Length: 217
Image 1: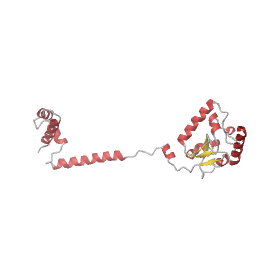
Image 2: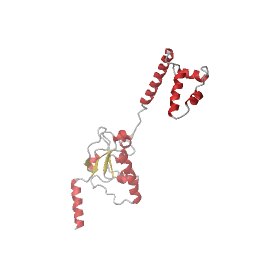
Image 3: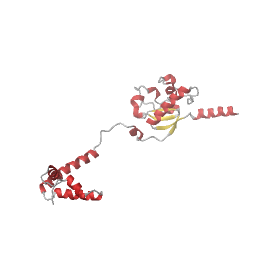
Image 4: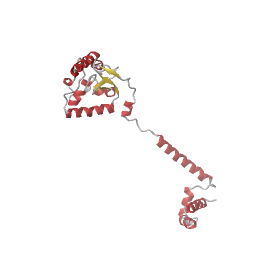
């Protein structure tokens, strides 16, 4: 059976399935003249089963086409930095940090992580050590409560609270300063893993509770 005959029968079956006039469809697509350009083209596109050379050549072409498609699908692009890689890093168990305990993670020791606190939450900013390390522009915030500085957009040491004092409650911030701090807090929460909370040392915590109890009396 010739290639043209195979194609004619295939198209005829499709035409019958769709309710078209078989003979008209076949005649329009495949001229009866076997020497027409369309008939000759069909002979090249669809190999004749009796032509082993043609089948062999078409097999080679098909192999390379399939291999190219598989290669393109499986090819991976260059590795790109993603915050997912930061979030997927092992996160230490959450714990409470007093100001003095937090100060131990100031980035000066390369063998320890770099932590900082924002609105009472301690974040691991080690992934950006070039910003928070000793030579970084935000080095003053490393190991400290950065809340007031972020509210003021001030990175100077003058905005840092006393390590021996209570955790800054930020009660004197105005509306715009709170808005600024909230924006920064959202940024850190979305970029760095939290590792704990900033709390007062036990002696200060007890003192504050006693003072609050006296006010309520």
